[in-house]
Amino acid sequence: MFGPTSRYANLPILIHVSGDQEIAYVSRRFIPPPDRLQPLGRITVRAADRPDHLASTAYGDPTQYWRVADANGTPDIASLSVTVGRKLVIPVVTPPDMGD
Image (tube, rainbow, N blue to C red):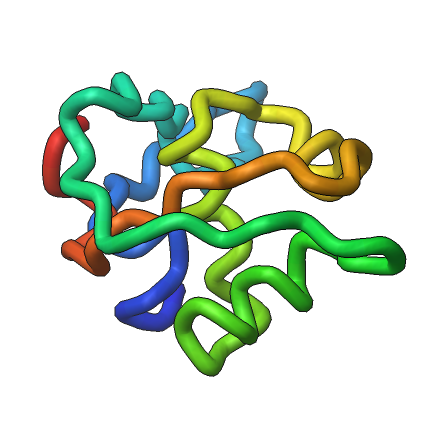
């Protein structure tokens, strides 16, 4: 259902039954503690950066912004690029379910 680089890859699909209707949904994803992620390096936020720009710079793939958010302990993706000059941890790429 999800690609191998999705933050939802390898999460179980669950079924909720409501009357005679079955509703499939993805199980909850917990953000791993940042100290369990191996740092690859750091990136400094510049003016006009967005989380997808940061991920594109770090990984060559803007859809991997969630990895940067996880490594910096924030579920609020937009907050990553608010503070110009902030140094963000860029984690080593591991399968999404590692460390959870």
